[in-house]
Length: 183
Image (tube, rainbow, N blue to C red; front, side):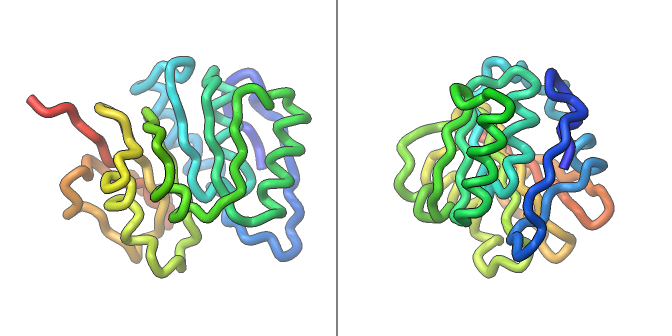
């Protein structure tokens, strides 16, 4: 795993590979996504939610590029432990809130709103298709906010009323959703 931009650009971290329940986003796909986001946002002003945070890959990218308010959520103890250790190594503990929880339970209980939400769920997750609807049902995305969902070609979200675009990077697809202000 490598941080591809910002003040930590080039830093590498090696999560334990044995029995690791993650599928980190490829550098190619992550670079494409962050090129889009860099043209859309001032990262220093964003409140970010990283669902199914895994290795913390996306959280570190945001903080590396100036974001100071990231919430990371994952239920797997090994991922949470690794992310806590990496946050200490990078000295970014003040910028990241690391929560060990089931993402679906977190979404239903959270009272916070976020400017940008990223979800990188396991592709075979049975309730993966429900995630965009739950983001909006639980009012997690701030007005004019953006939600990006990573998935494979087995899923299509173009019929969702909040869907705005998708980008393909091989078998990795990012679907973009927005909470646009009315009028």
